[in-house]
Length: 237
Image (cartoon, rainbow, N blue to C red; front, side, top):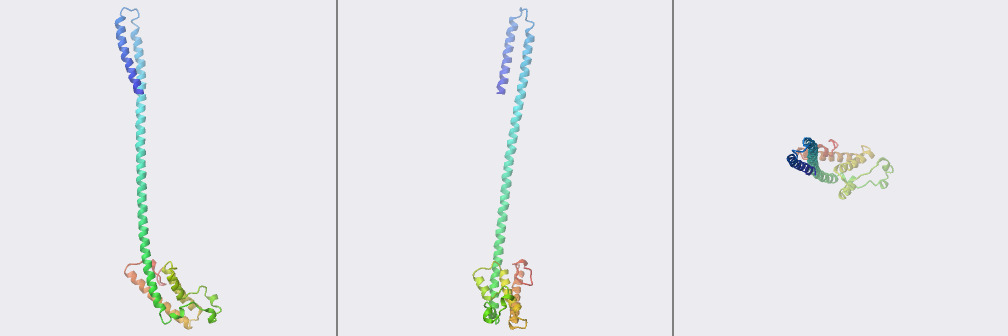
């Protein structure tokens, strides 16, 4: 629109120049011929001013268009950077998930190794010559132990541990070890240290701890486990 207006102004200027030539030739003898050049100059100046204003408006439009184009480019660059940043974040999340899955898989494998070994040690202790004493829950009523459940808050025996293992009730090997130790602790707590049951419980507890610690030390030597996976009263758990 603006450019068309400029072209129109220049066309008028061209026409005015033609008209001026015609008037110059035809008005030599006219008494008012001395005034027409000034009138023409005034019209030319007026049109020049309009042309300049039109050019300024065109420059402003071009500048505005350039600014809008620059903003559009910056907006696109910002969108691209945002997409790249999101992709990088997604990649980091995926890597962390993969690392977490790998860690959980390794931890599960270690736990299975420990639980399997616990089962082996448990069977050895259970088959010991004193194992039969702790094979079943204490029948306090039949044995006349009227204060047993007042002294022992949580009874435990090998049979109960075995049933829980078969039912997969244990979440980790620490729970297994805790129940195993509870069997011996209950017997030693209720019975006097000179009582046969107390002595047998103490002997089996020592054998269990010895076997478990030896197994644990072998694993450490092979660099299979860390200290946090141990299940021994002599090592951090």
